Length: 150
Length: 265
Image (cartoon, rainbow over all chains, first blue to last red; front, side):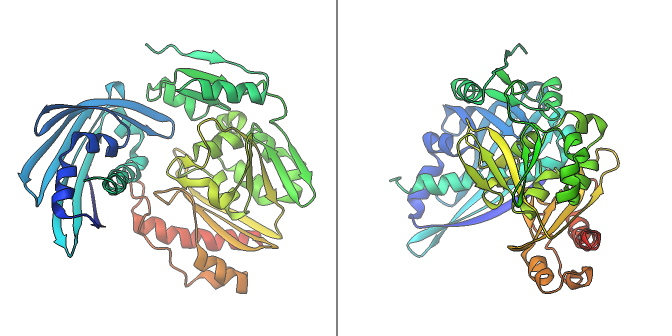
């Protein structure tokens, strides 16, 4: 079952700055909740380890993060999928759009997430909440990381 | 691959030290959530710190206007406690419909609160009764304790010692439970204390237990099921799954709240 999420953030930074940050591996690593490693494979592809911890469940996912449909500086699609061993798998993507709003930038996103395997069977009632929390946290972290970004 | 270290400290200070030393340690209270997760390999902590030998963490006492329950007190002990039945019968009832006999005989109040499952029963009681969580470091008011889905204000090396509940004038708990898992599809705890009326809903919120302030205001004026007939719980942020849609759960919260008030008398 795919979950859909969306959100909107007003950022004081100029669109070019926000766009640069969205493409910065260090910033992405800081913002992806539970991200332990993020290695650049190419300009648009990364290898990642993400530790997901929700209540009693704790699993380490290994997988890839890809940037697609790159349309600088208007937005892109950030997609990731990972294997969490016996826990199952998780995948998702977010379409991120940047628009100029006065001095600053308006960031909107639409995201979808899906899980499978044991984690999906057992955690069904928890997945919607967890996915939303993870997406919210990514963008909250991003807003915070932008504050001293140039 | 699944090996872990097992520690059984004899004091709270030793348990706290172990907890801050080992990065990936988990406290074991009743183990009713942690152990199934470990058996399913959904959790693999490096160290298990068994609290069963730490003295002074178990039991129920009445201290003035407060009922105090030790963190390691098992659900069945709360259910059968004459003091709980006398001081806060709604709490004894809550525990009697919590989980199944196995969970009630092993699970603990501290474990349930630290886990903060969005469908757990105890968080509703702590929030509605305006309880206080006492840890090895500080006292945390209910409104500050629950921080969202499976999240609490507890620091990584903080351990719950006991929970205190102000004895209310009136209180009631009603639960609509999933017949298979016995988790609350919706559970509502209502309480009238000298500090006012509080209504807490569990099982329904994506971020865990929450208060319904409109119901609290209505009940403060008129403590009756009729008083909250017109209050709608918004479906935004409500859990939707194969057991029920968000609209269904939001509607159910109203129905269950009225029953909880009726039960409180």
